[in-house]
Length: 344
Ligand code: NAP
Image (tube, rainbow, N blue to C red; front, top):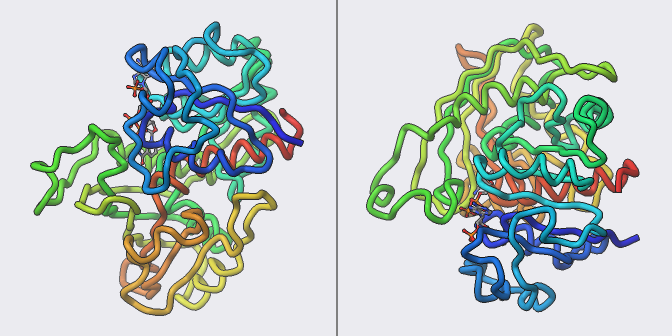
């Protein structure tokens, strides 16, 4: 069955990736696109500065971009994907839910709210049950599910795989691509020949979102995982693909070989966009690399490598495509989960 969908913030970096993924999707059909007032009223091909190497799909090129307002789009749309800037999402996503829409959002607002499920389907699909709590508490006909920050998504599936050993402490240092900041995020003068050891709010997001994703859900409330997580986030001059160095301590003994087996056998989800295997583990110590490995499985696979035992616990590297697995693909996966679980 095909579901009609719309995209809020369709002209941006993540919005374009959503179009790239949804246009050929067999279960979803794009019917509405929204953006800021500057883009509203224009055909999509004129409103969007298209920056993906494949052309704008014909199915969306002539759709007129609407204002980002529930009254501006048809109310027979089954699901909205949101890639709005956080401050805008904070203001308007609730209005869409109140108006009866289901929203799969990539925007960082409300990710840590107690009644908002923050979901990576391969890690914590059961947290989707929180939607019923959210509807009860907020009196909405619609509802919102969030996907985490791109740097969090890169690391958490590997942590979920290792949690069978009882994670107690996680340190992570990131090397993040410029596309993670959006088109207007980092100027060339800032980033060429450089590395920036600060990304506003990113470290706090990695620390808190990881614990929510790895936490439990008893049908009514979430509990946070009790591992200590500390992150250091750096912007580097790659275009796409976040690479991360991770150190993990666990309650039980865990060798590098144990960790490799746990990651390789960690289950993917039975959803169209979930890759199998979910985590590809490299033997070569110099892999994964952003340019070589970010496009694996349509940019949806998590890559890991460099597993070794060190004095600070198990050490490894992981990588994921930040605008695909880390943003647009993550929202699409959550949309597929909503469809599978009968919410649409
Ligand atoms: P972006 O390139 O700046 O795009 C922002 C989109 O929102 C555009 O469609 C823009 O429309 C629209 N917009 C801006 N102001 C608006 C307003 N006042 N009302 C309605 N629409 C408005 O940003 P992005 O990189 O795609 O990021 C979008 C969201 O995803 C952010 O919350 C970001 O934190 C999150 N995210 C991004 C990444 C990544 O790798 N880039 C990863 C994970 C999460 P106009 O074109 O008309 O201005």
